[in-house]
Length: 176
Image (tube, rainbow, N blue to C red; front, side, top):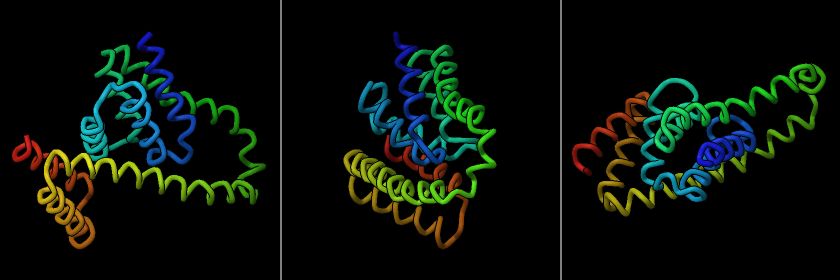
């Protein structure tokens, strides 16, 4: 039964997550944390941070890790299949029609409509992570990490993976 739940959780998130990784993350959080309770919000945030620091698509990294945590190797395989299946199915079905619709105004309009929805979903997720960090680390450490990260990313133009890695190291040493 758990493998069916894993498949369904990742399949639903990936079939509804139009636009790649960023829209899928809040949907995964809703399934993994809110619906099934396989992880806490803090654990999900750690998986997301680590996944962002590593190369390759975020959805497959998160699926493999979460699936493995929930049900071992079979869970990881099922989660990866459920993550890849919606895109594979859509590509097979829609590939022949791509040339007909790629410049259609409806496709451009759909993309424009989806962008603000994705922004709201990511903003909500960021707020939840900030509130969780505030509760576990306190306002001063959360504010300091936020400020240092902002400066490192915007002023010093450091790679986001490096910033996430340093923040993880800091959290492991000073906040554990």
